[in-house]
Length: 355
Image 1 (cartoon, one colour):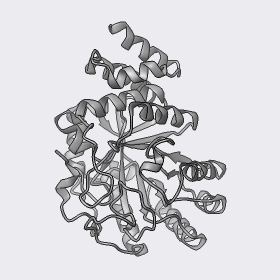
Image 2 (cartoon, helix red, strand yellow):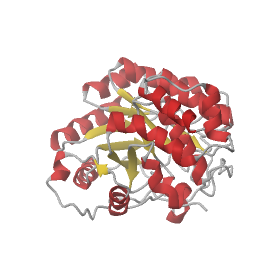
Image 3 (spheres, one colour):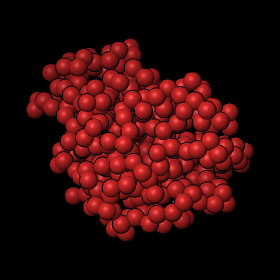
Image 4 (tube, one colour):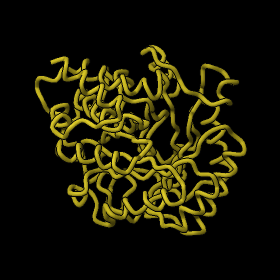
């Protein structure tokens, strides 16, 4: 049996993907041993990233007010979730939070806007913010702004945007179950526009929305086909008032098996244990670092996650190290950082930790 895990690891080290049958086995089979599977995923992770962990900070610079009906989202047009809605924050507040993110040790600062997509004028405003953040801090910048065309992408690319986040969220066949106001092809077109503009993509998915094992495997291979360099794996946070709630499948082991499978299919990609990791992985959270080399800190747009200090403690105690930036290296090693202006959060932050 252990030969099968060794074979999976060796294939990944040769940049060869496992078979679909192997992927389905990793996710579903009763005879899978979790620790050997995680060890197999660790080998390509260490080959390409060593023991380092990248940390990312999300800043919800515009909250709610969205015309899209994505059923998992507490900012959508048909949610009853109790969020505080606000238009785009001031430049001063956005830049102050970028500074806090840099000083906390973040590898990347991600500005997130709700809505279908930005106007050309809004894209130009974002471009100015990107330039200013990169001028002030040794930190990469990511933007998540909905659907983009070539002109939007060109404006952001010329400003020096490092990555555009635009998740596929689920498989093409399952997409209609979670959203009706735009299509899966719209999302693929946005990723294509970013690529033509020379912007790297950050694109992943959300587990726990009623998808099948085949859907998850299809996503892993679609992201490999698209050569996505950064893949966030989110675990659905069941927010009261949203149309799509947890399907009850997300045990800690299911989450870890999925992270391992995605790593073995995409051995060179940055794999992120993203939204909802604390609540769904629970006491096994540190094991996510065997396949994943990236985490969010502080929260997930409308729900809170672990603090910087708690996350860094987990990373170090698990035997890994933080891949900080130059500004962090000269700051205190015990960050007391917490983002300001978290007024878009759900009023019950404990729902970031579903039972």
